[in-house]
Length: 138
Length: 111
Image (cartoon, rainbow over all chains, first blue to last red; front, side, top):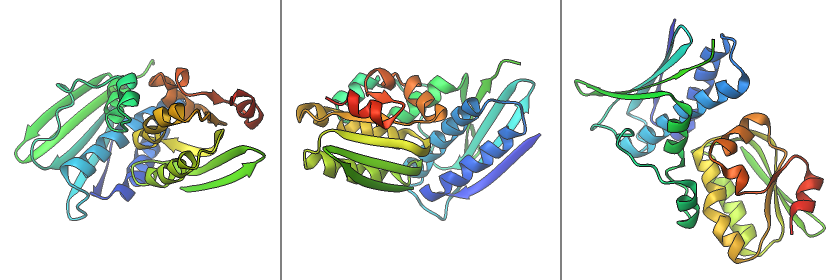
């Protein structure tokens, strides 16, 4: 099964992405807490792209897809922009640093790394594909 | 997402209704910054109707923690559902920000 959605790069569309991911995951026996965590990680990645890579330009869009392989859920976020932010080489701050610096940024990427088991990036032509996955206990 | 505030005796209560995400967090940030600027103390945040939180929502709280400490303001969050609480726990913020189940507990927890 593969489900996908395409949205324009507006922050208001994040709720559509969340509803889409939640709907796709609800078809499986997954606890509401785990569903929420996966929804959150995808929301964070999309928000990052919409705000930083696409500067909230409604003429540009991103595509999100969800697929399942055994007990592993895979989320692909595809967009066309300059090579996107590389989460893999990003050294995330810790919460104490964030609080001390009165920041609010950086928390999203901490969450993605804590929630997801695998994070991959792929460049295909002019498209960036960010693929994250989570394995749940069978 | 809606943000409302009410006063109960000396308690300043901010209630959040809906999803706190990248598009809505600015609203809460303004209300909280104003309450801190007015030296309201304690500030209790009612999360009973908070359905969802992502990093910009969390960031509203983390970015004001030092200011609260500097002004000796007690900031207590209460009434979170399990999904929202889990997000605070993953970040270890439940050890840093006082979080209680009920409003009464929040009032007692405030200094």
